[in-house]
Image (cartoon, rainbow, N blue to C red; front, top):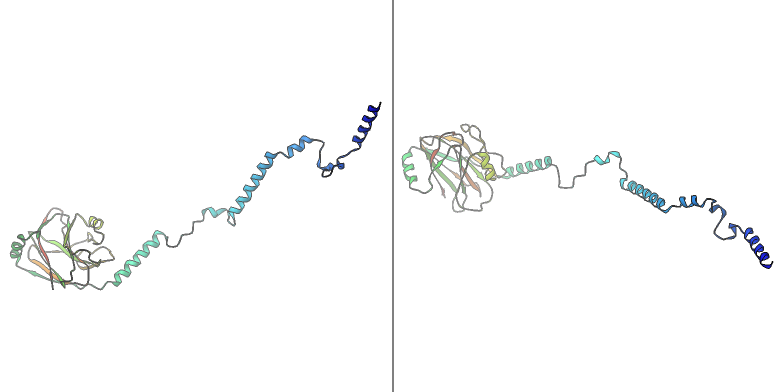
Length: 269
């Protein structure tokens, strides 16, 4: 009987208790359906939602003030990195400035002589003074200026047929005092092999071919066909300053004939 009375008393106390009797818990915080409550507090779903929200916020921050067409807006060009047009115009302007700084070139002193046989006989005995300029070829003799002289002189003649002849001056500082000879099959090949030379264009050689644009090259005498098979052609030119003379013997206009050339180049005080 005592046990029954004690059990009844305990049950009556428990039935009188409510959630409000425990601090921190209210009846509003609980639900009659605990499963639903657990579903709403699913940790995996909350993590996914948090990640999506964070990505959306990050995207907004990265996009900043741009609009939909901002992806097609070209990148800003860094200083000194212009387009090809700006670089080309800049180089052309620089070449024009260099041309303006170069002093004018005086025309050469030229002459002819009837002593054709005498010159040929003399030059046949000298080394490298008798050469063959083949059809379609251009032979260029590079003659640097030297401190010991004041002018350059030349003489030449040919067998049987004429040849084109012209003189140019390269203002590039002299690095070698040796006189050198270069042979090219065409003016285009010459341009690729000798960047400083500024080769002769394939124009009408009887009217005088003009040199191609080159910032360091000046024209003294355009290339003309000379009747060097009928008389000796010679001349001289005073040094305009430090640089290299380019004496061109041009047979590029001939399709069939090679030319035998007799020539000599020397300095004079």
